[in-house]
Length: 329
Image (tube, rainbow, N blue to C red; front, side, top):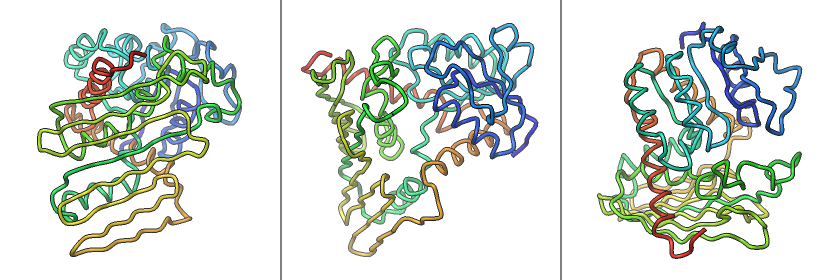
């Protein structure tokens, strides 16, 4: 990886700080944070050692090479459009946005300024998910017919340091909701099984939570190749879950990304992979993701399997689900 990159982080909440730590781990030293002080994080930790700027004009003077868009979802598109003329690389945290407003303009700007883009779907770079992709491609369970995934976490405990009602994840004006916030598995289904020809969703709001976004949703997606993906997402689980089963004509794969287990059983192959306690699988997924981003950036490859067009595909699935859901949120 080539170094000497000037990186700006726009949105210095929990995910922004995580990216700062990982960028430093990868050897990036010139990092700036554009601060508004409107979120929960009023002051950055002193040990984070980045330069803070407080206006767009001051930011542009730093001549950044790459921008990380890590502010609330509803601000992604406008922020990206504003910074694109001044950068060569653009990283946007998932999801791309909460609607399609301004997306076509953003894509035109990316093409005009020849910016290398990347979507922040870190789960796709989890070591077990990478291995599952290889098992599917190698035909270890035959032809895949069905993918079932469940992801859930207690939003009340997500960020213990703040009232969850203030979190972007449960605020409609900031692009929150379970379906958008927990969109990783929809992206995985697209990665593994390709384009979707039909989507159905049942999307609900838990009245006890007193929030104005969806708290739980169930999506069913019919892929063009015949695979059916069924994905459940919720903010309700007291004990976090992120697991899935891929069923094939010759066997099946089960995974658990909370406990980092992988199990495969088929006619010709059996695998029972236990977690390696020396690995922080979650951190490794973020580091793997950034390394791939920098590879594309260094080679100036604009169009690839992780660009913002891929982020648009998963966003369209969620928006289609909202349109077709028989429960309005």
